[in-house]
Image (tube, rainbow, N blue to C red; front, side, top):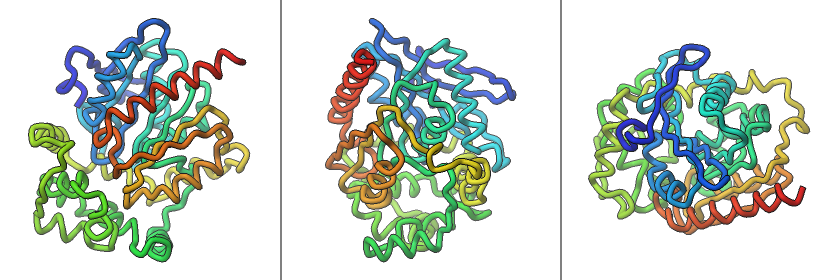
Length: 335
């Protein structure tokens, strides 16, 4: 969580609707841009630890919140509180609180969904957008899980969303709370391809978690860091984090976006998509195609990793982010 991992840089703010957010903020030096880092599941601002330190050392500004339901931020139990529309307003409030101008938004996993919504509805907040692992997520997506599993099984030989029914169930949060170590082991695998059998297929994740299965940690997640991650995630439990899934599955976000035309969904900001070539769930084939269809100024980078480029290939990602920031600066100057 923000206050535990980076106490000297952490803050807490209460926003217009009385929601409290914790976040890390490092002020930019020498007129360099600030990166807004939006994490995914099961995560927190702690999973940006390498980028926070690296970007700050290079003079860039950083704003990395614990998103709603995570870390030191509020954790409402109501599913509708996790709508992208409301959370996008929260992010705008934090940026305003820090008196920041346009930022480079970076989203990973569910953070990419939130970043998409903000890029469509609040483009004035951004210089550019960066999507990691998951690309542009159509704001009007209706999550028909059975159809999505059937489609991915036909395309790739296995379903990619078989764990969603567990995450959308009434007992899902309790199971994850009781077996937090098993979930960490499942979601941070040493071999990314293991998700083809352990996460994607229907009931595979449930079986793994109920059995309290533990696998060796990857080299990029030392035991001490895994323990910190688990302490953060068990701090408030999994009800809030799973509400991101429930909000999507119950159609809250698609209702908010029901009036958007295809033209209105298009993003013209400079956009970077970074995908893992061995990510077995957020498949690059799907996310490259979807992002290309909705953006007009896109750069794509493929890395030899799974779902966690910010952890698996932190040095390579840092080079890509700095290169993209330089490209964006050149584009701004040329206007």
